Image (cartoon, rainbow, N blue to C red; front, top):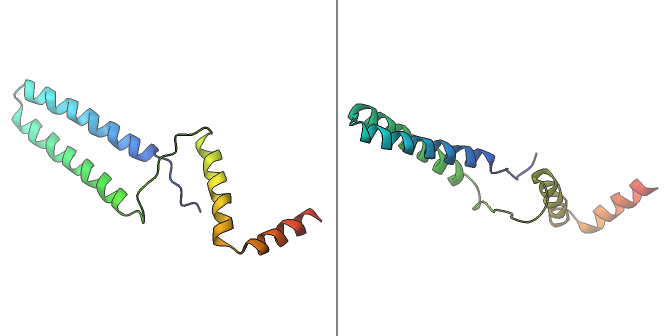
Length: 100
């Protein structure tokens, strides 16, 4: 299991919030107050769910803007973390055993 999460779920929620904001503008323009209240409640819930989701992380999310596909970057990061989480000598011994 990985600790790295592609930002797709966050992007989707932000897109949903943007769509809901457009609906709010339309309800306001059409003077549909009941629909406006309902859409505001939905918007508030979406934003709260996203905030709670991000708040549960042990640290603030990082954004990587360098080269490479998401899966490749995650694999490289996991490989690099393995060296900090395990004994370096043990990793070398394991690598040498695999070669022979």
